[in-house]
Figure 1 (spheres, helix red, strand yellow):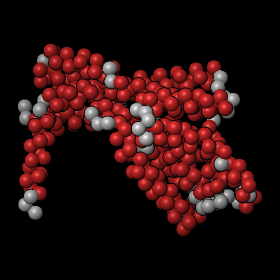
Figure 2 (cartoon, helix red, strand yellow):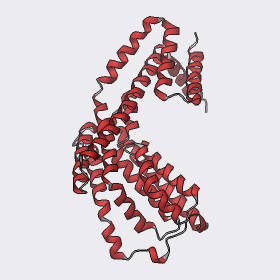
Figure 3 (cartoon, helix red, strand yellow):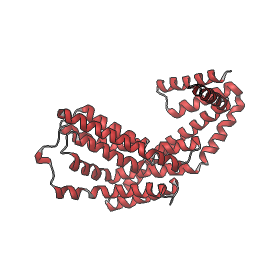
Figure 4 (cartoon, one colour):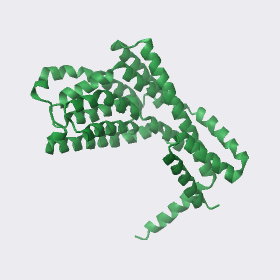
Length: 324
């Protein structure tokens, strides 16, 4: 069968199953199994076993549970409460300041946790009631939370980037370094859009009334809520970009730092530790199934001749570009 037709059928089936609502892991794995048996028969199932062995032996994936554990321990420790409190105090007097502060807080949370759900959950619990109480437009309030949460997939230490690095064979450290600037630019664009829109239409993002504003000394005291998050970000990303640690080692440093931060906030209890570990286990199991299924999909797609298709397409594109 023609490789181009196989490409259309594989991705068409994958999109159809996603539209039906099946989990991503089953969509990728099921599509891979179907086309492997269709192309090579039952013997192709050996590919799945080999991919499982490859996925389980990838040392870079050790960083995944550590970063996920960081995210959930931060949530249990209440560090995000202090972080959002500082943003509330400093940016509240601006039109749209609470929404812009939500984006800024989500940016810092993304640099500490590496997963999108952490920022969405934390800001949804902390920031949304605060914005709605002050008559913020629901679109601006929810949009700032969802946009800020999306930064967790881009800003290091992104779990998604670790998975992509494993599947593509790219260095995790280089991928992290390449994502920092785009992530910060995107965060800046979000904040700028909110502030500009609320400046011209204050009713959708009113500033805090005068009686709720804080004096300069109270603002300085609120900076204490930023110290621990910033130190964690420096410890994790600084050790990677400075060449002192691999992403896996940096994840260990971050997890240990999070435990110390939780103890500092007097939240290091067996209950919180158990809750964080159970949620970490659930998330990591989901991630590993996606990694395994994506590896099967990629291997079978390559085995069907996609490499030649891509090379031929690139040659034709290069030849066409030489005409201009």
